[in-house]
Image (cartoon, rainbow over all chains, first blue to last red; front, side, top):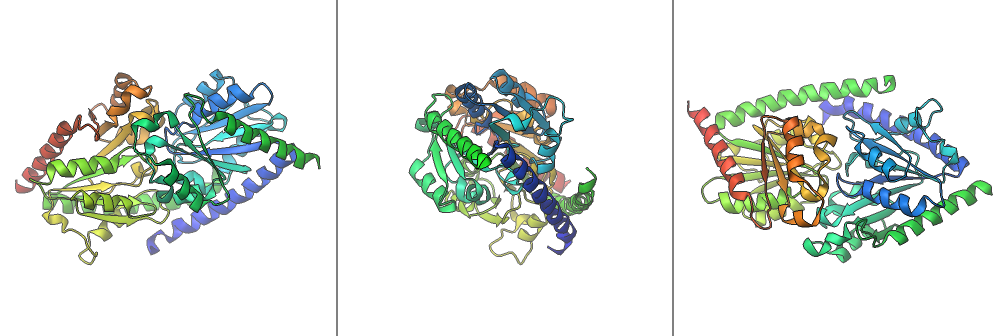
Length: 232
Length: 232
């Protein structure tokens, strides 16, 4: 629409500036050998609960931290800290996604309470709960992970193709609730694979622990790959 | 941030243009005595299923239709038509919300397959599944309704205060799944009431039918109020 052209121009410039900042971040992460994982999903798909459980399994052998984005409240960072995961909350104050500049600011030497990411094996970025907008903003991560809970319904991949085509890993979450909802895992797997043929799909439940070993193995392998690239 | 100023200016102009278009729509709806309800929630909170069940209860005595927004696919409109609710799908092709111009275009006399809204008692607008961005775009509706499913978790109102402070009605959905998830209804009700003291909160299950009579009564009362204003 013609009337939106100035807004679209401004958005294109914003995305180009974001891409440049994200590429600079990615180089810094690669040089440090830090795996950065960007978690994206609808509100309430289980991102924070997954990170709580992941921290319990991996924190012994690896140095982990998280950056958490929310429109309001420090609730998620509080939960992660209580689970032993150092966490920095970004309160966006209305913005529907994180962008690379926000990550850059958290990682600056002046940021209060920030972990030195150069010392980390794995930095999680838990994005704002939103299945749409975060897909468009590169944060310099090596890996986007999308979560889809079985309670959201199986029609979501084709309705939200942006994130499902970009995410390298798709996690089908809340598997413990499968007996109570209509959700055909095989069909959903097929739709996700259509959108991202090279992707990995895992089924997990943070409540029962099902699938979490496979998820943690995947993270461990990718951390090792990050280190090996750095040392070559 | 200074670098985002052009984008913010463009966004302010976009929102102002949207508000003008929305106000014009609201006047047309008021003149026609048509109640327009804008349904907003995360993906998978049960908007479409609620409309299917609502249509079954109300279609006998009232003229209803729906406009449905999705980033991709006609799945929701297909479901609503199968439930007997005339539905027009807006495929946004990436946009994370509906805006007033999109509604205006659907209601133009040239739009293919559009209901004449002047003949309708109630027009539902099922927004794109997104708890953030749709809250900022007035569509000329008389009433915003936010849905929060119990499976999403009780921390959502304070994490997404924009929509919970603007929505006149909050529906706590998927009540049939309450036994299987941690969700304290009393606490959630209190948080929603803090954000919107004058709002109405209902608990519903589209699966069991619980709470749907109260929901339909509320719609019937508001339809009657719309007609009475028109005839005064």
